[in-house]
Amino acid sequence: MAQSKSLEQIEERMAGLEPGTIRHEALQAAKRFKSSWIELGRVLWAVYREKKFKEWGYLSFDAYCAKEIGIRSATAKKLLHSYYFLEREEPSLLRKLQQESPAKLPQADSVNMLRLLKNNEKIQGADYEQVRRYVLEKGGEAPQVRKEIRSLLESAEPDPEAARADRRQAVIRRTIGTLKSLKVDLRESKLVPVKLLAEIESLVKKLEEVI
Image (tube, rainbow, N blue to C red; front, side, top):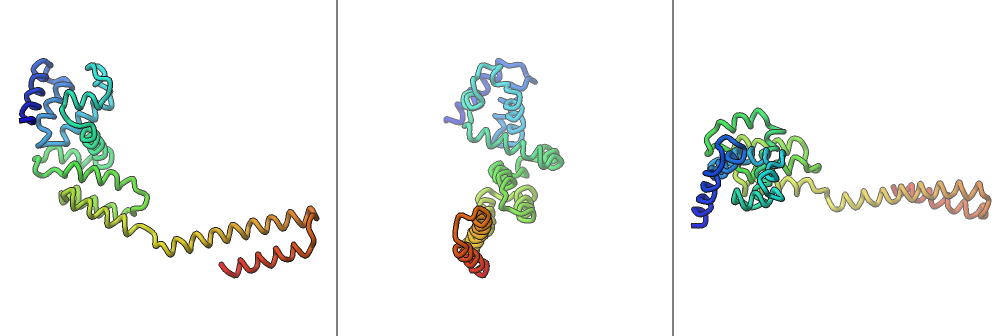
């Protein structure tokens, strides 16, 4: 019932608008949202980019989506970001997808996860390409894509023992550098006994043996 009422409200708004305008197109795309998220994502991206919602009396993009299109802000932003990701990273594929039937489109959730993965510095090119093929070529569903990405991120995490060893080495190297600089300053200023300088030199050698 709620969905039917929402569609009725969209149709009422469309009745008062001129067909062919971007505002009318956005509402039309919202009606077909269930069948083609790419179409709605394309129009929402245009509305967001050109700030058209302000011309229509809305103070924010979120308010426009909630009151006129009838979708939550988080959903709207996911759609427009996913569409823009395809436009930027996969323009040839996007043109092809726009001609495909809705059943062959990758899921919006899956594309959004791929977008976020693209910006993750921990993921290597080969791993990203593996997920890309799964999402865009095989139409992987969101739960499985999420599982695949979680597995990649876990494997990308450094070994705790190795990480501790690296930190230990870094601290020792910094300490050695500090002691060597201190020894030079103290020797030139002649503020401490020669014996203390020798002890500093001995400590440096012991630390160097640890590395």
